[in-house]
Image (cartoon, rainbow, N blue to C red; front, side):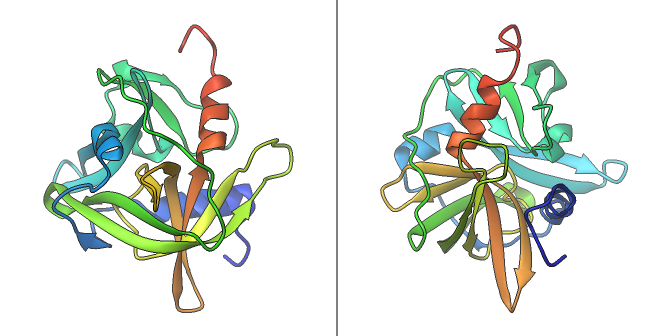
Length: 203
């Protein structure tokens, strides 16, 4: 894959974050209190229940969390609020937590931190710098951004946080390019837009 901004490329990227291998570095805790309160690890089993599957989710509004659509096997289907009709790798579901972490837009060149899950339910952390910001045709808000970092399997659906501890995105894929790993995340404006586009009855 040489060009990311296409729906087929998006589908290929989301697969890249599946699996049980770990990336990033082990972390004992999430440093940002508001992010820690909203973070939700996800765990499951694949291949006849023999292999672990790990990912993450974030509470983004009172009683509502978001993760990637490709993590649906790790979410109780009875709690699912909805999945956007458009080709977006997002899934919204109900939670008991009623927190709202502060959000901010991504900024090119700014340092960021991402959190995810590794093998054996281990919290992982990756650091990077925002490289690109993309607005997909047909959208009024930023669609996604990329940053260089060591995130990978287990980080899907997890938060990307700026230096001030604000949530700036939800990770959904990665690709290796020129010896560097680019991580892709939906901007929070896009995430909120997709949530608002769900039927009101679902929300």
